[in-house]
Image (cartoon, rainbow, N blue to C red; front, side, top):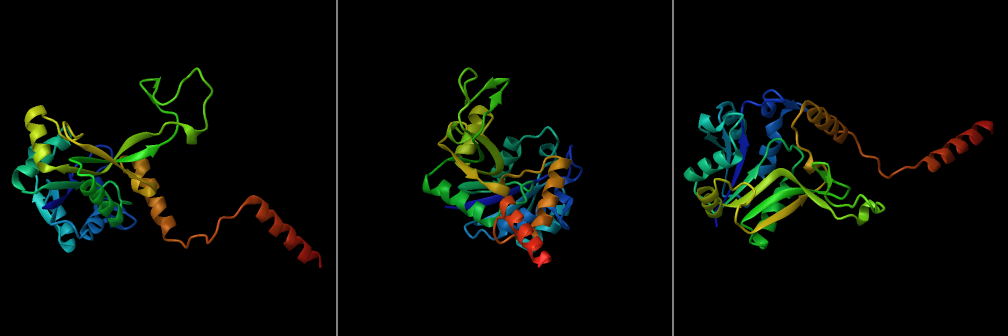
Length: 249
């Protein structure tokens, strides 16, 4: 079985200018997923799918191959379905794993676990999702709660799974079949579709200036030593009282 990794990256972006090349904690944003993907041993090959040659410079140190995307699939209106189909028409594989550069906190372990889950359960499409166990609405209507009954504790509510999009997996044969028949395959079309839960920082997706600032703050905080154990207000007060008593003595 041939498993190919693909990292899509356009040079242009509307909300954050040249997002994939912008420095996050002194490294280009895309560098984080390049590093994480390069350490996944199950991949037969990894490609960086882009419309600009500058990305070839960034992926080369990681042993990742630059794939030149046709310009018509690199516009603001181009869809994931379109450029993935074009890629699969040229690159032979059994399974395609897509990894987004806008998720800089996705690590090698996340990717390995994602692929293992897809293989173990023989999914034809696998979508990364985020667990949301809180009241949710769609078009002003409740999804997982009733407005006319008391609100239960959040831990008892039916959870919602929101797309994390950081990782997507498809059996290439099924993807292409869905594209030919429906013109759509990203969500799975007619296939055995599974959902893989990402947790913690791995769910952060950079899509705006605020997201970038948040990610930068997290990167900075991660560089500091962690507190060895949690502390609480009552304990702090005890220390203050002890210090005051020592001063009196």
